[in-house]
Image (cartoon, rainbow, N blue to C red; front, side, top):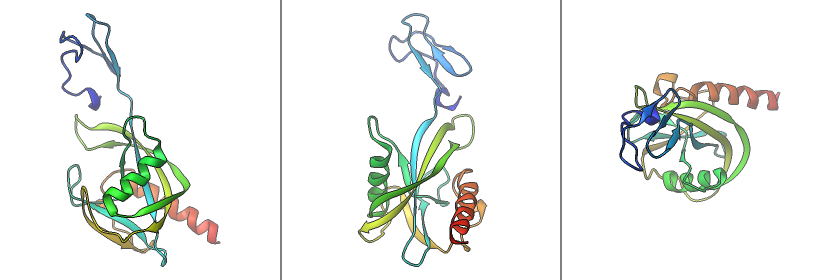
Length: 175
């Protein structure tokens, strides 16, 4: 119920809200808001040596931990366009989006105010630019697939299992 954490009054009319398990309702004006997950995008970008690009987070949640480059969709934005925008903002790279890796639910942060997220992850190929940390990234790093950061150094709970699943699929393709 993180998205509604702290909601007490209707944003439309100011009357007290009824807080239910998966939504809030205003009995006065009829406003209803559901606790739906927020869509986010992420990219698995490899260099010519097969290494994976990860971004060290500069901000909370999980500041200082490694993350996949990406971010949240803006209203009305197509997920692939969001991925291209986020990669440009965070890394300075222009990418071509390739295969969909999968969809991975998680929460953004920990605690009662954490919100549910659904992460859409694609492979992406660099088509222009030199990687440089920007926006909310403090550092970019290239990692061999057999030398990725340990789970406790990764920012979100979904990343480690996703990377294991993705590496296994990569191995099956090669084998």
